[in-house]
Image: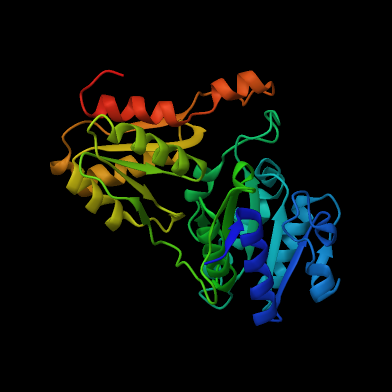
Length: 326
């Protein structure tokens, strides 16, 4: 299989879907020039400016236009430079795109994909570093995908574009230049299907996005101490593959949930609640969470490094779940 960067995998998925379906088009700020990180680089040459549209700096306008186009049969892919800016388009995404199918009694479909770049990276400060995925898990009618590697980034994006409802596709900027094998040919990862990235028997670590890599590093280090860690990547948060997660917890008896978002009100709390409802009798210790402090992300590099959760935090939580001190 070819080695692609996370960014190249996203571009490949977009290009394949645009070639497959003429109703797919991309719109956003500076997308004809590749966008802020280069995800749409070269697509204008391949498909023309009628399908790669630059927009004004007005997220609410762009989201409203895309929602209307989707309801009329197009399959728009909106690029939001930073997930922080999606706050400016919440009305259009949450109150309209997510609800039109229901409010129309099933007469309208909204096949809208929203690509949003999030996560802590590059000392970008509090306005460009948030992880807001838990907000959108709370919205009926909206799906949320959050890939952790190039193969899943391509496969989930293709599934999102083909979905007949709105999908928020969250990309982590710190992963853009990471590389991995991506299958040749048709590669689609269904929304709502988790993946066991590493098998283990003592503790399940369910990790999101960048924290999947941190969890795998932690698992490798803990193996030297005789602790077998199973790493599960949900890949999408809504729908959530509770069956795979609960099956892992029934096997290991322990669960640590790791994400980069602030711990308070994060996705980990909802997942923990669902797991204890599904597998409470199998738990040998309390479910533990790893997340960022309840504070804005600091801009300074050293402060950001101290703020962002990582491998050592996962190791500490696993040891606590096992009843050991770090």
